[in-house]
Structure formats: structure tokens, C-alpha cells
Length: 74
Image (cartoon, rainbow, N blue to C red):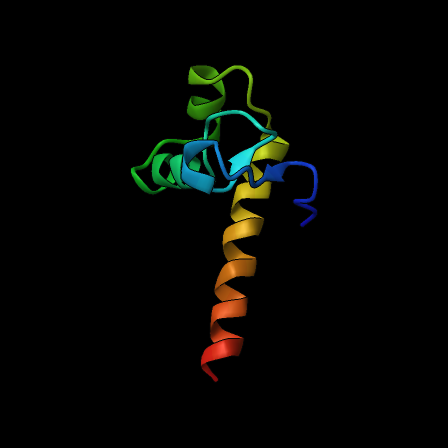
């Protein structure tokens, strides 16, 4: 999953957390919504400035971080 250009890191924004396209919504926010049971459609309805590609980039970013954590731990 391509996250470059979608997931951004800016030291002064949201404490340097990974955000979506420079906005103030973080990867963590989106993952939390999904984990709480919200569907992609509900997220897109509640946050019309997000796209399906944004949500998929969040999932890809999380999967990549998990993979890197496993590699470092091994």
C-alpha cells in the first residue's frame, strides 16, 4: 500500500503523530474509529474530507509499522 504523500509527519502538528495529508486527523484516529466498529462508509460520511484511499493508507501504515516491529524484535 502506498502511503507516501498520504501519511505525513510534521513535528508541530498533533505532537508529531502521523497525520492524513497534512490535516489534523491522525492515523491513530482513523484506526480507533475502525476498531470501535465504525465502517469505512460511516467514517467517510462523518469526515467528508477523507477518502477511501486515506483509510486504506492508514491500514497500510499500521501494517508496515507492525511488520517493522516484528523484524526488529526477531
